[in-house]
Length: 115
Image (cartoon, rainbow, N blue to C red; front, side, top):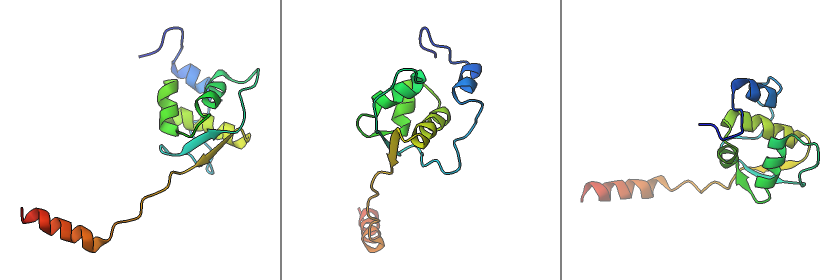
């Protein structure tokens, strides 16, 4: 479903990414990567780049950015990689939780089976 006034055809998406189908091999973006703007949008910027900078004033997951823009995640990752290469956004992965002790998990499983 496209938004009024927007052209979400494959041609438009091809133009947004300048024909690329993937971000560069060193692009740090997956679905949960937190993205933070390092600057404000500038006049003359591509409208999607400006929208990303406005959305990422606070840490925002790449998948949330894609949802807000109404773009496929693959296209959003390419746009994020462009901004990252230009130093306009920074990326970091969220902290991972510590792996639970396997013995505790085994005890919980035994307890559940005994119910």
